[in-house]
Length: 317
Image 1 (spheres, rainbow, N blue to C red):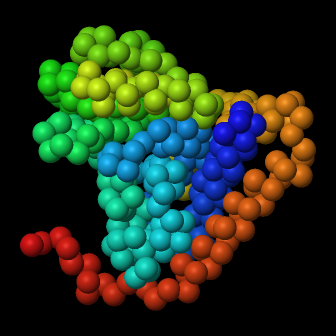
Image 2 (cartoon, rainbow, N blue to C red):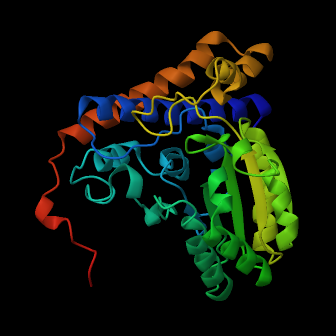
């Protein structure tokens, strides 16, 4: 795939995530979706760049802000929207909702609403992959605040001690929920912590899918070759609140305006325009994405609501 073709593919993929998240926000505000919802608007480049490097057997674990990662891994938009809206056709039959859905058939092993809790689970998947002959690499995505959790420390240490095939991906969007990361740590370059565990650590431009893809390829290859884990710190910014309903009063004046000028879609579109790609071709990336999501939402909402009596199905053996 040529440079422009790959960039256009990335632009379309990021628009698919953006359109999905905007549709989720719309449906949450209208009451079609209920419960906790955390959007990844502004953070689309990470999943788009990273997931192209994953093999079918690899296992991806995300936080509660994981819609974009699931979509980039191949989970259909209709199945996700149906899940979020509590429909029987949802990927988990409407039982998981936005914050807890999982789709292992696509290599997406679920979100987790406990900060940092996906890390030891991913380490377990990596340990299994080392011994079951699958060649599996586990990837765990977490926020900057999760690096201060004890379970994360244990996961990082264990993975290094046993040279497990796992990639730790820290999505640093500058806020640990509502608190700036600069108020949470003494060293704000979180990738530097990797050296203390005995693994390589790298800073990555998380608003550039090409940069993410390159870093992912190196880290995944290292893990698959039996050389152990890597910590990647992907710098990005969310353009919305921590959750739907967040008043965002903690943001300093002008921060969002600056972030909107460097967010992934605006940035990549500007690069393609400079490279001579026609406006109509760029607009088509958004048009196709929005049409897909509108169609998926209509189909999802047409499905019957899940029966509450089935809420405990698949929970107890």
